[in-house]
Amino acid sequence: AEAIALARGLLGFVAVYVLFDAIQLILAGALRGAGDTWFVLGAAFAASVLAVTMGVTLERTVTSQFAVESLHWWWAVITAWVLMLAVIMITRYRQGRWQSMRMVS
Image 1 (spheres, rainbow, N blue to C red):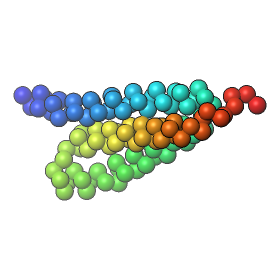
Image 2: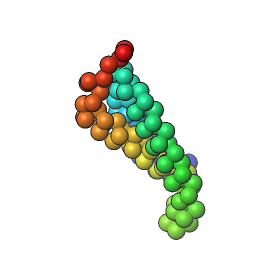
Image 3: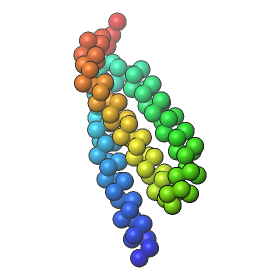
Image 4: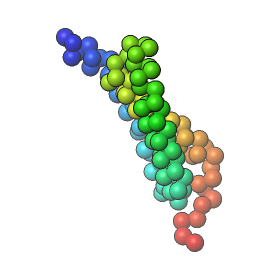
């Protein structure tokens, strides 16, 4: 019963994660295919460093202050990370700068 309760709580994170991961993967692939590889690399690196830094820095505060389990905290951090990536890729794609990039100089 305890495992089922834990799984129910985590499945919400998984649902959001899968949706936004699909969005960011498709758009990152489209941007890389159009030649915007450095932006995709830099954005993924920056978002990853930010997510891990915030996760490690705030873990003790959040888990003790709000009585959140560490497992839920890290799923929230990972979900926020993939959401951040999706927003970055959507923004870059909508800017349309990739349309004027040349693949071969």
